[in-house]
Length: 318
Image 1 (cartoon, rainbow, N blue to C red):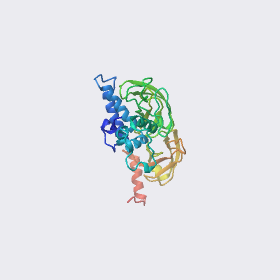
Image 2 (image 1 turned 60 degrees about the horizontal axis):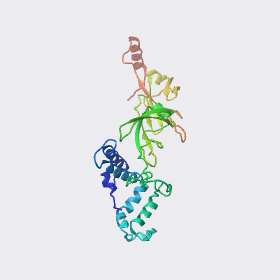
Image 3 (image 1 turned 90 degrees about the horizontal axis):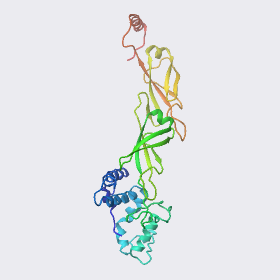
Image 4 (image 1 turned 90 degrees about the vertical axis):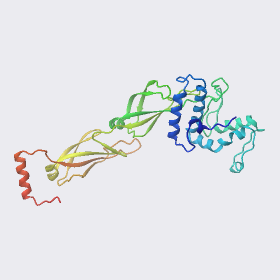
């Protein structure tokens, strides 16, 4: 078995992030997918790209590859383990050496089963690829479809209540659209990923998964921080000075709050549990921040009263 540099295949560095690996795979997959590229060698190139991604996208599989990958060719040719490996508790018994022994080690390490049988499970889960193109019944390893990612854009209210949504996603390799029915959990957050099992790319060993990455539209009234909501509450100068009541909008409808006499701009009124829902605990709080406003234009009587107030008041703002 010839050693394959999966990093070189995807065109990324060995310290590339998972996001960089995924972006590189998507770019190459779109270019060499057999459905869109009929050139000679495109299909084989696509298999190499998919094989590389199947290993590097998974942190555990990548960790094993990083540790042993450079020595795979050495094992395949029947060589002994490099110095130091045995001291760490690894026993490489290839049953006489050679490529067949290496295949047994490789099969054990990644728990690959042949398409017609073989086990899933083990320390790294059921994972396989088909470097020979054998597929089911062809004598090679069956390849699970690659995972895909799509974004879903929600309003703050939609994210808070969750529920049923119809979503149209585009396949990153073929560009074809398909509609999915999704049940969103209440209280989904910006950047959260929702896994739809078996809705990813097709494969001989079953389809991959589809991950929906949540994006929230900016809201005209609310600002979300963690699970707390913040909103402005405009009040007139006399309401702030004398005290009053005001209606505050929440995600579940308006609520009446009391404004204490002598309230200044910047004071926050806390509504406990009226913030963003939390499926694993208590909801956040809603904070209404007082904004004292005055009329743009005054009637003659209003101006007269304000002038009188200015004369009799002993209050100094500065």
